[in-house]
Length: 237
Image (cartoon, rainbow, N blue to C red; front, side, top):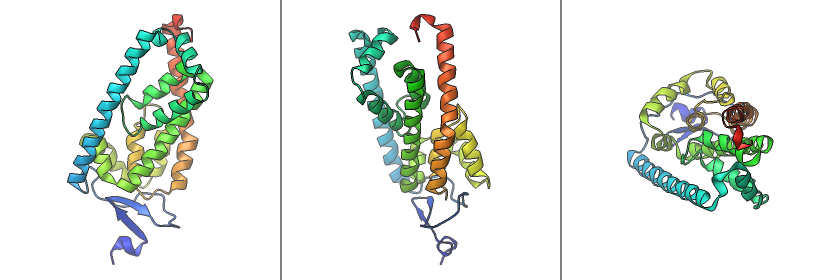
């Protein structure tokens, strides 16, 4: 019987997942996250990521072109009028698209946060951006926990994994993870992927995401709106 088996833990594709009732939150000793558990599987996942990203970029470019030619993107007022025409479907679609941005990075994740207050207004936009990032973080953790480090290898560069992967061995990883999630400009996506490779419980992860995410999002949206209003007053924000 191995040490992991004796402690009630099991591994899955290189991730360390606690069994039911496991009370540990801190990361355990694990293999190098920069090396995939199954190189062939990791390469296949990387191909999928690249294909989805290219398709997403093509889709975004097409929407931008259509937006300008139709007049929707010629002013903030016309954009908001267009979005309002979809009623409740507009914020739901935005939240869904924003959450997928954490999985398939068509544009930087901050792009969703920045665009939300422009599209929906400061208050509602901040709320929708928060919900999108929370949902995206939950999806990332779920996928990482079930697919393992092959996914992290496919999603991020080896340099990025080497830089942040060493934090997994730190005895205060959960504390540092919570602080990073609360701050703007922190590499939330890679940290959430890596958190899925630890023994962190779902309850702990959800509490950190739900309670710490609002502060970074609020700073982002407030700061961006202040800059846009000062530099581009003609936008009418």
